[in-house]
Length: 336
Ligand code: SAM
Ligand code: DTB
Ligand code: SF4
Image (tube, rainbow, N blue to C red; front, side, top):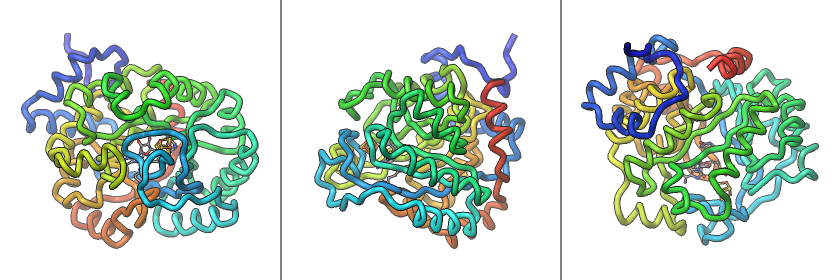
């Protein structure tokens, strides 16, 4: 008997996920859209705002990243921002329509000496009535508990790509390192934001490998960002993709659709890369099951469509903002 596709499964095989990618395009998008409207209001889009609270100078060698100290990308490194300046940005994000504020730091891992400052920022953002998210590199179990106690709702930690392609992307940390931090985050009772990047020269099987890894986690991520590589000059993957050409837009849509099918209750974010996507391509992504975006004119170190462009997009597509509800998200996590 065929299982209900709107019910989360954790027993996906890699071959099954790859078979979904190979479905006729119209069938795939139709099926993903059907699941989407059973689990969510398909016209509601969650809006998050990013802020780089500590920029550049990172010890890792992630081959896509403008912030690695290993590559000459021309980015100026900056020290950890003060809590006051972060709160001013959070207030502006709220006024601009964001429901979640995500603080990103170019760290390999969080250092205990920085945790009190982070805790103050998180508590301050939470007090503004925003959902809180942070992405600070690897965490210990104890650090995860401290961040949760400070009011952190979500922790972003991406697997980035499938396990087979991972060593082509970064060698200074392992897939298992990433899985361990995700486990600490779940154990501390936070919701996970976990996805990856497509368009780094990986194969379709690698993209299936990423989604298979996410769909077979002990709990599906509440938030699943699908980033299109933003090619950064001076990084190995950015330079390679500038020479070889970016991923086909329709293959990107397939990736969104498969994400929706294998993690039917996750909020799937059409994440980095919107700056160079047409309204039509973004519309197909929303149809295929994406229901979150980053808003505001900047991601971490690269541009993003600004408020006016997104207000226009939402008006043309009859989309509306999704309300914030971290408690529901956390409950769904344990049920999934
Ligand atoms: N340093 C922390 C870490 O790597 O976990 C947090 C910040 S890091 C910049 C957050 C995520 O942004 C990465 O895991 C990656 O998936 C995404 N990202 C970074 N640079 C990108 C790029 N050029 N294009 C698309 N996504 C990117
Ligand atoms: C995620 O998956 N994408 C965001 C967020 N999590 C931290 C980061 C995108 C970064 C894009 C390149 C940049 O602006 O540096
Ligand atoms: Fe550092 Fe994160 Fe960039 Fe990797 S993705 S180099 S860990 S900031």
